[in-house]
Length: 402
Image 1 (cartoon, rainbow, N blue to C red):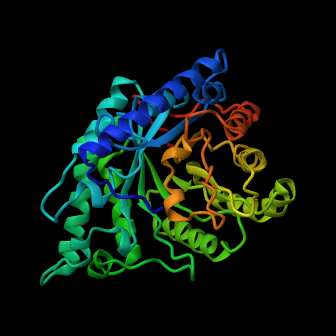
Image 2: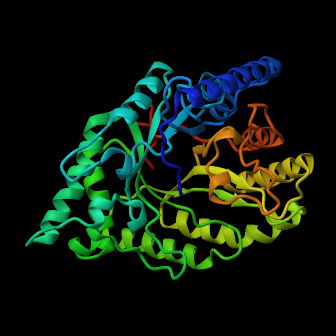
């Protein structure tokens, strides 16, 4: 989904941030101390043969960001996570400043911190196939007299370079992200796909290249089709894409279900009951084709809920629990990734603020790093999930192949 861009900060802004971080770090430390013997989310997930993780950002030391370099946020990552995924730092816009260069500075820093904490990392993503999320240079690129050959070379070089750099340290990749237009079920076109001969040829090449470059890894198609009303065309387009992959022998292992949930009102029990049937039919169709499922970007927009924090938090928790109970009933779901642990750094506030100006509360911890009912709901859903049978994990234990 949409992400904020990094910005430079002044010295005065930096000092202000450091003051805020000192308060936040103290609050986070207190919250973790109060947790006492309450197990981390990863510990609960592991007892059921699953992993619980979160996205993480790069940041300068002391910057007020959802970064490993922010001690308050890092404490939450270490406590609750058994898996990390870069929020922005592996996307083309971050690592590909031009057609002839790469910049892995921020991604390498995430990998180094994760390695120091013995946390595996998912790759997100190798191709975000929408024109507005590709680099500007790509959309204006001159592919020359033989555009198909030049475009194929560019895509293969990109995926091969990324996969070779991180080797078996990354065991699961979102190879292609959000290629289906939810408005009409068609596939997006980019300058790359127009040069290569169409979106299907482009997406197929991405997966074949990833399989060659990372034969150990789980290869995922990732999208944000969801269970709320208005997503029928999006789901239909994703099913058609997956059917095409299967028919053409494209090496896709799993569907990444982003799970950016949107509450439907205070009566969460009625809402989940109304949504469950159609959503389960979609998941059944996916799994019937032999695909696994990964929950890749879970958070909740508190739409149609009152501003009162207590009421909102309870409804978000109930909605999350209903969704996870359904999703975790599918034994192929082994990885659950949250799209951020703290409301303080959620992308949703900037993407879609509430009409009443109340700050969004989409994550398991609030903006002072205190656990909310949503965290308890996630813990309860994990604890209640059926235990997974042992999987065929890759040799270093950092990914699962279906």
